[in-house]
Structures are given as structure tokens and as C-alpha cells.
Image (cartoon, rainbow, N blue to C red; front, side, top):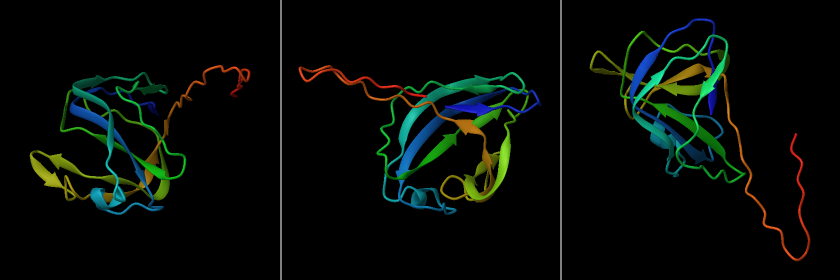
Length: 152
């Protein structure tokens, strides 16, 4: 998974930084994290107790996951990025696009929960520029022949 940094350079160390994916049958998100899961359980695909991030300007930066996420091919899925505290030079800025109700944000500021943290949040009208790299499942050759696949 990668995000695209904008022209502003900043760096930060994020404590208990994690990325989780979750299938959901919802077509629009609500302001409650648990409701958005649609009865499913998020899968943690990346975790670091302390994670330093300093991307180059105007570049893609990201992470190879620690664990796979098996997308079922039917449902929508949520991408959740959490951290418990950030320290350092500042926030890492990324490009965003204005789009209605596509993000949910909550935080702790100076030790005080904001926006219903950690169970609820504030719906955002923008979406981070991100990209996911997907890998297919390999197919074993059999006595029936071989399967050749071409991806563009």
C-alpha cells in the first residue's frame, strides 16, 4: 500500500502504527467505526510499535504488509490507518481529493480525545491518494496442461 506525498516535506515517528483492512457490505460509511465493519472483523496487515516516516516530495511511499488480506471479490473494504501518538518534525502531508463522506477521522490531542475517539469519528469530505498492489494466487501445472496468464 502506498500514499502519494505532496510537495511539503515533513517527517514523523508514529507510535503503535497499524494498518487494518475490513470487508463491509456498506456502500457509505457512518461516523461509528464498529458500524462500518458491517459485522466483520478488521484484519491487521501491518504493525510497528514505532514507525519513522519521511517521504521524498512528490513521491509514492508505503509499506509491504506483514500479513495478507484475502479480498473476497464481492464486498467493499475499509482501509484503516491508526497510530497512538506522533512525535518529530510534524505530520507527513499527502495528496487528497475532495469527495463526500469517504473518510472517518478521530484523534487524541494533548491527551484529550477528539471527535469521539476511539469509537466514533468525524466524517471527512476528502480521500487520500493511495494505491494498492495486488498479487494473484499461483496456479500449479497439472496433467491437463498449463495455464498462462498475462497481466497489464
